[in-house]
Length: 223
Image 1 (cartoon, helix red, strand yellow):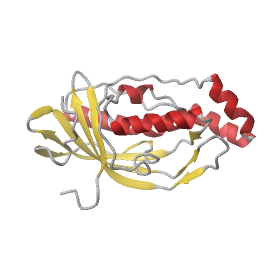
Image 2 (spheres, rainbow, N blue to C red; image 1 turned 135 degrees about the vertical axis):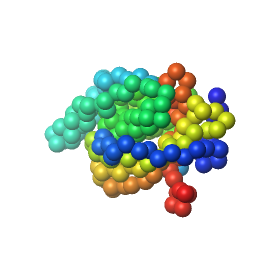
Image 3 (tube, one colour; image 1 turned 120 degrees about the horizontal axis):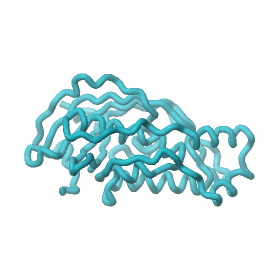
Image 4 (spheres, rainbow, N blue to C red; image 1 turned 180 degrees about the horizontal axis):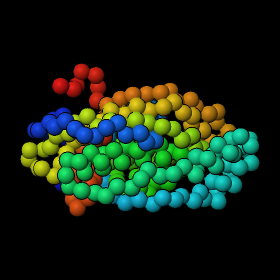
């Protein structure tokens, strides 16, 4: 399987994502845009674990430094419900659903620290996925978290690799609500503004959908 992101460079057949209305789920920003929204290469597998238990070290180190308000906010973040799992299907609709599910995991992992589903959807060579894993792990190991935030995910179109019909690119608009990140280690909280961007997700079917690349579309790139 190719691990080089093809995205714009591959031969393709564009198709509109007809019938996929705007999907409201959790959001995408701290890393989509702040991490360098042009990040990206990776692949993935499906799977989902709905719970995460913070380690005793994280809890012990974080609790003494939190105000009652902060402790309540952190408890709310850790209790955030995961996105509804999806059933992988090798169809254009299935590709769009997989891409939407992957995006919807982003705010969940930053709020809870639960990386199981993200890792299952991320290939070892996915640099963007690994950056998110690294940042989430460091954030929660320091006693930090991100407050849950909302997003709108709107699939716009898709196309396939003419040399390998198992490979799709899904072009998706993501609007993320403003939210707050709490870095931990007595570091001041960070405000993240509302953001909007169009993302290209390259995914591959190999008995399940695997994300191969994520890229922020620059202005003027779309046809």
